[in-house]
Length: 81
Image (cartoon, rainbow, N blue to C red; front, side, top):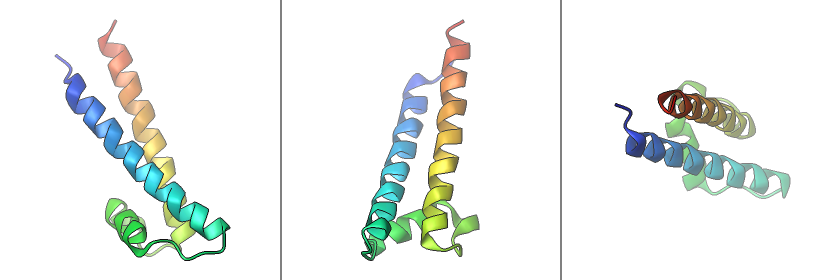
């Protein structure tokens, strides 16, 4: 049996990560320094990419979040069949 609550919680975590990444990118495009807490959060979310420039790190977090989102959505759809 599929744990839908667990899937939804993980999807929410992914959305939170993407929102953090978007805040960082917004700050960069507005020529402001991103909030250090947001940058630290991104580095902890994607430790393998932590030494990338902040804009690339934020893009990686978004890209990875979208991949996970699609995977979980497909998993949920498969369980409904």
